[in-house]
Amino acid sequence: MEDIAQFNISKLPKKISIRPFLKKDIDELLHLESLGFPSEERCSRETVEYRIANCPDLCQGLFVKNDDGNTQLIGEIMATKIDSEFITLNTMEIGQHKESSDVIAIHSVVIHPDYQGQNLARLLMTDYIQKMSQQSVGRKITIIVHEHLFKFYEKLGFVKLNENDDVNDPNSDFSKNGVWYNMDKELVDF
Image 1 (spheres, one colour):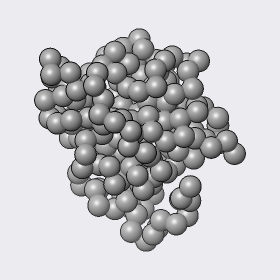
Image 2 (tube, one colour; image 1 turned 120 degrees about the vertical axis):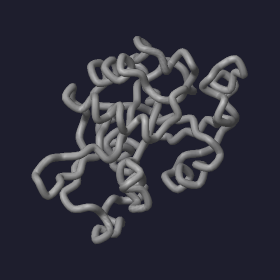
Image 3 (cartoon, helix red, strand yellow; image 1 turned 90 degrees about the vertical axis):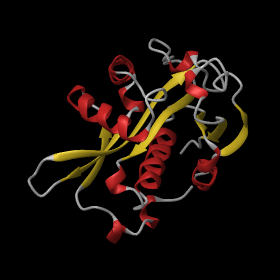
Image 4 (cartoon, helix red, strand yellow; image 1 turned 45 degrees about the horizontal axis):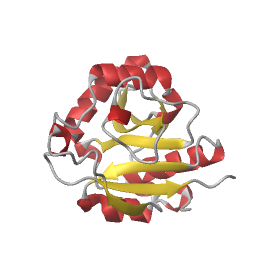
């Protein structure tokens, strides 16, 4: 697994931190979701509130401290644990987090457009994978992605498996922006 220390620190924004989301972050998180996803693919306020309340350890934010001392959310990972091997339309719904499961489903990864191109998604994902492994939170991480993201996730150790037939249902608005593929990463116990 790639170590965070291998990142070129000089290119990263100063004063960044990664932490679980708090209730006070919800409005900023919804704004970031709107910058990262079309309306049919983004989380609703109710879904965000549910995930932060029920699985805060799986939902992480990347924050930068500005010169005025205020923090700004610039990156996010939203996830739940699911009772299937792959993400389905059902597992994305409110009430579907299964704490006893060993499958972590990442539902969204977003970096603010003003901060893209600085390896922050890689930093956030590498930190997330290490935390989930070290804390023995699950057996694997699963995610659904469009084809243009294969290389990014493969560099993090994810393996492309197949098209996601459930999420690609032609009757679902969720699939109107292209084909979704399942990718998995087995977690290592430390």
